[in-house]
Length: 129
Length: 366
Image (tube, rainbow over all chains, first blue to last red; front, side, top):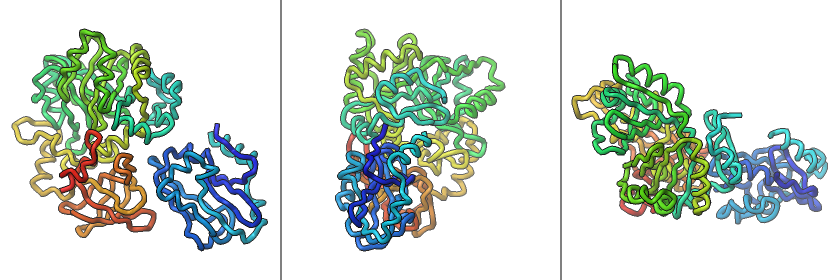
């Protein structure tokens, strides 16, 4: 059973979001990394770029498959986890910690209301199986 | 629920992640595909390949039948236990399946074909059997198949056999097998490493699996099997060749015995294709940019477009590799279209890896 921390928000496309003040830290969930298997390549949005909620902003690839990643909220990308470029397996090892992908300075805090909470995300992945 | 091999419960016990593979519930990995891949390159791993189809072909006409059925010549098999890789072609020279045929003894051959192609293959074998008076084709669904591969695989596996069997197994040459009662052990595989493929009665296989596990042999899933065979430059049926492509444009010309009087199904089509000139070459690609090459991506060369037939990530080389069908004569740098971007790749000689070592800087890349 994959881990779904209760303090995070989620997209049904398996991104997690940690909201701290006006900044959203984004990663992919434990369930997603389990589905994909060993990750070998991560493409992140560029620092300084603008993203809109729902946009495809990057790709994560495992040995097995490629999967688009979507921006959960709109705003400016203020930091990206550059360590993932050479160590994408950090997402497998620690999806909610060292495997974080990027941080967004949020434009519209109300967008958080559109995200799933841990309970709703857990139900969504249970329905998948 | 799909078909299950006799080792299904063993896979669950070993923590396998099970996926559907051509109607079979098979292990894709037991946690980390890359760790399993590395175990085979550096030590020893084992694969349940009991989903593959084992067929025994026997009778006085068995040899003549197989010489007509297969593009490679079973007449080359003189020593009992000897193995031969071959394609089975349709009249147009397209590949119905690829297979291994073992010559067990006079009038008795064992053929191992793919699982996804089972129904059409068995139908084809039956259809082509007409006109042979002394021929029995028997589908052996009572036989299970386990591959043990890696630099330490033979040593570790030999220790698990009876004393009287060990000496024979130790002396087996490559592509050679030995038969003991209901068990057949061959020094063959699909990883580019040394090792054995072991066929025995299904009910006996779980015990062998347990003993292998206790000996420290690492269970490996179909995921690692695919990256291992890709690094080894070995074709996968359905990806690298199928009924619309001939062996001559699939890197398999070496498996076709065209130069003698023997007539086999598809021979005339291959001779015609050869006379007209082979338009495509089958090559390895090494991705120079970051990213991962995948099946069916478009390849752009100065001589025209081609296609990746199978691509993935190479754990040994730590970059992406692929096999591709390109316009004949293409060489050097090419571009691959990945999600609307053009990535740079280099044409290289197959295989990428042999017996744990990269062939890229070892004269393999000339």
